[in-house]
Length: 312
Image (cartoon, rainbow, N blue to C red; front, side, top):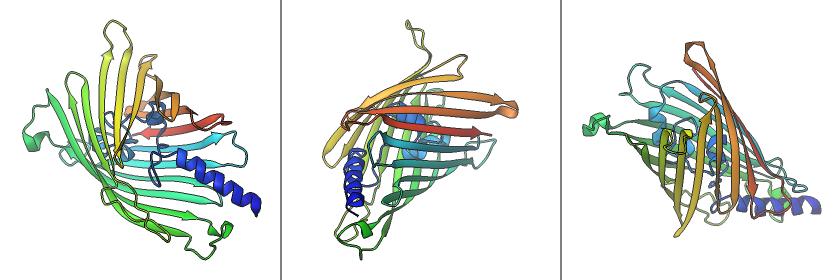
């Protein structure tokens, strides 16, 4: 029993370091965004968009399904923390973008037998050029809404309060906007947990509203340096009167099939890669890996992330 309580205490300490601030603000979603240090708000052009900037799914023209699994902070004795992510994206029309795109996503952060956080998402986004009569040769503007149900649970049988309820949930929403300019510059904005739901078991424990501004630049071939399919991105996070910064780089080589990524933030440094396999009828299979080296957790070999997605 004493050992289990010690492990639970260590888990709480580690997961606190894994977040910007508090429950349901984990950084550990999506292999590609993680390899770019989490700087994805102004990129958001794949199935990772629902948890970074829901507006990005409006630009997806194919059905996509994505699965991610991870093991966090390997090497810490007695600590087993992992994440899982599933997402499915469905354009409402395969011939026009007027009707928008729907997404369904589930994300989980857990330590078996100790604690668990689950987030269920239903999102919608569409292009707004027709609404504001904007020239698509100059700007591509999208916006979206993400409805979320949050649920977390703890095994209080390991603590001094075994009679507390084991789970608590709440409903909230995210909104997002993404502006992509013809010169390769993109601006993104995401406001998460708009209603700051109370998920406290005994005392009030509200999930903090998080606002993110993202800036990215993309070029098929970076001038002078000749780096192909190059993206550089940064996110500025505003939460509880504090700010945090993320940055990331990405390039696709080998005819655009092999992705090389790196990024970081105050808590960690990230690297990763991905490879795209092409099939007939424009179907694609993408496999991604990311390694995060924590800068504030000693005796850890890093966190490992594996992902697979299919476009059809």
